[in-house]
Amino acid sequence: MKKRPIQRGRPAGATTYEAEPARAFGEAVRALRTERGVAQETLAHLADVERSHLGKVERGEHMPTLALILKIARALECSSAELMADTERRLANPET
Image 1 (cartoon, rainbow, N blue to C red):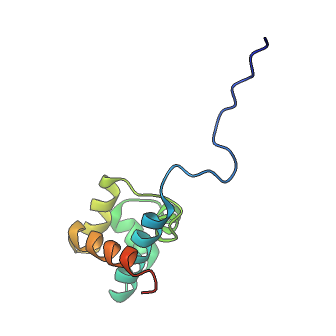
Image 2: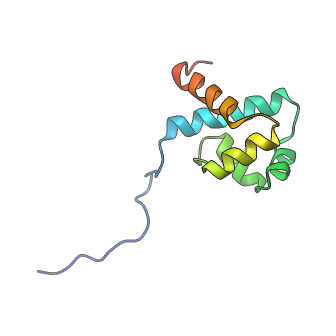
């Protein structure tokens, strides 16, 4: 019996995170950022992350780590609990 070769990486279209919470968190960050009149690039600088990475978080393409959530909250001058509460509201009511 011949062994199959091991393929590295994920299959196309596979994700390693749950998309809905990532999307809801990204929407919460974007809403708070725009409400405060902060540009994405400015927020990225204040949070000490790449602008492109912050954009992916806002679009729900990346699930942020706890450290990144705390950095974003600090940069937005709010608590991480506020961001999480808004995220939970968006998960409960996807239309908002």
